[in-house]
Image 1 (cartoon, one colour):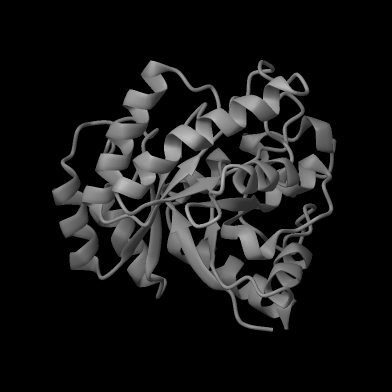
Image 2 (cartoon, helix red, strand yellow; image 1 turned 90 degrees about the vertical axis):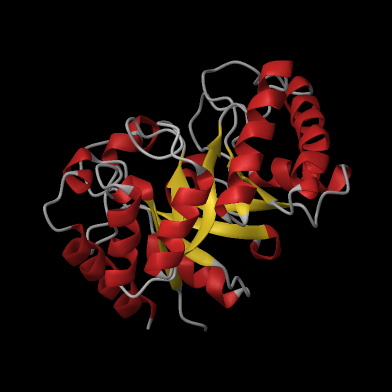
Length: 271
């Protein structure tokens, strides 16, 4: 089994400036980061030019793996197209490899038939936008019961149906995989893995939400190490990117030490 290659998503420490976030990655010996377009007062949202963010990443010696994310991507409208083009331009100019695509997650667009058609429409429209900018689209099914795209199989089938295998990959999120209860893995179609743990002993699976998502430790209930081992065993060789949403993680005085400890726990578990 190959060793996991770790990365960090800006969600691990959303209060850090891009420069400090990139330095955090460097201090952990990591080469890859994910930046976000949903952090108030931070890059992208506050209009920091892509060239400036790119220069900061180069200075720190890290690669920007993705921009996270084009929201509601499978509800294709003229507004969404405009948003996709702006975000894809930014991703290209910042030197990112991929754009994360997040589906509608409010209980709408869930009907059988409608759901699959909407997904194909969006992927078909996104394909040339991504192609023109040399980007990959990372499709991220969410495990929540209200989500319009819960199933990785459904995403994989849609990608194949539009001939998009060279332009789209799946995001395997260990939290969402656990919630969706879909046993199948698609290692060959997976471009990125998001990792986070849930340790709260009292929350039921159907009540698990983003604020429960902490760093992976010995008390993890999501089976992160089992999921990672299976992906590695089946040939996945991409990044495992930390994406916790719990406030207690995001407000840590020393995120470096906590991330280091989590990486050590995971590595020990995978041996």
